[in-house]
Image (cartoon, rainbow over all chains, first blue to last red; front, side):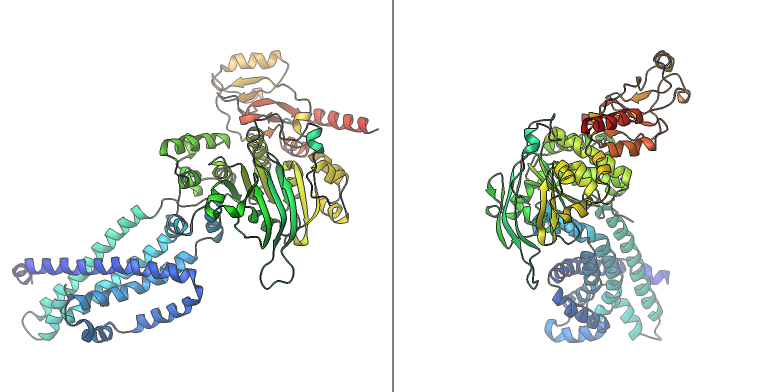
Length: 213
Length: 395
């Protein structure tokens, strides 16, 4: 086992980095998309039912199936992987963002208006910061989920550690099959743990002390 | 009844805000203001006309659903009137953008409604920041305001709302409403969410602040006692924001315009007259005072020479902090007392005074003036003497 890792040290390190990078970029883009959609939804409550249905269907849609649908459109490669991971990452953040934004006390929003804040200022300075702890919890869930989806995206030659898992699966019975699968799986778990620890730290900086639990 | 401003109070030269600074408020005029919500048969506000004189506190009172809050919110256009005109300082509010208008009109609501994710400083600085003040000016202003509402800037400016008591939050709310020095301040049930003793203190403080600033304050309340205490004028509204009576508290109490007002003001209105008399109309007793840091032996001697058994302890800025008995004085020097002293502002009502005195072991209460300066002590004897005098005058 150690020999196996030792021989492929730089390769494993590179794939780990790629895996993390894919997830971080996807979650980042997903956060922006999800919060953007949530802001629109909160302002137009009629769309909310539609959004709930879309996200419910989205979450039941197997990631393999989505990748299958995307293949003819975006072909094999990192783009397809990125789109698939981002799609799934949006869903938990979107749900939390809608709940968080709607949960902001209406009297606070009225007092923001009463003091002469524009809609945009009030969104930026009152509503988003107050909803942020809930949105951020969604980001953390999303990141964990994206770690797993990114592994499956390796099927379409996406970057990352998923490649080892698939190699292991195709070589079942072979000398290094177990080694490949274990390195891929444990690697992803480690990346996920480190990412969550970093997010926890980020939360400390971005959630106001006045509303931290 | 009448919608024209009644100026008798000023003619008598005794509106409750005299003795303070220059009037910095602006006149508000409502002309035939109507608010009709779509889908409702009767308008929430049907044709309200009203002049609110500059520098006065006008209280909107009435049963719930009478349209008092709607009327208030139309002044800063949180609710747009269906028709009619509202002028502040002669300027039509519709001529200004909503945000511009609201930055010039202070807004204070129940519980202070502070933003929990911002520190006290940031909460107070909101409007000045929107107006583009520079950082130095803002921080000077914040400290000034905290001082005005009786919170030590050093101790409180960096706290978050959840680290404050309800009364403190409400004080910060008032400071926030005053931040950009607006000529007009709107208050919506400002002291509804605090306990009675804190409410009385906050009301006293508001009167003290108003004595200094003389803004135009429009305040909605459902509490007729609060209206009588705070208002230079009271507007009593019936359903649909119809004016039942608009007059000084004295007139509302002694000559209710109709049965509705009489009912609303309620029974025991002769007892309510105690709410019309203010502590500064009563003769105050001068108690021996000591300043924190003085030698205990000297103070003890001074008190004994004066034939008294207790002493009012002031801090370095002349604000009363405690009222211990001589036997409670320990140590070499006078230290800051730990008790929570309930002071009365000089504009507090005799009602409040009796209330406070009943809960005090001294049978009296400490009275303060501007910026909580010590003025004297009021006791039962003084109040009964005052009432006896009143009765004698009436006979």
